[in-house]
Length: 75
Image 1 (cartoon, rainbow, N blue to C red):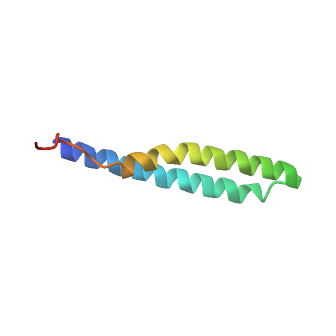
Image 2 (image 1 turned 90 degrees about the vertical axis):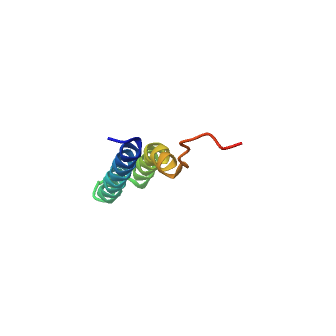
């Protein structure tokens, strides 16, 4: 398998994981409303989920969007 094919597979996998994580967090936020908790507890849980989501998705997004440098620039 060529390096280009490997990189394409890695990008596809990162994007797939990103979509799966976004779906997970969407369902987690939807389930919060089903809990019989006070507003303060729900707010704390939502804040923790937001921090978790940001921590999980940001590195994947950055890696997907990072420009691919395969060779040194020509002089």
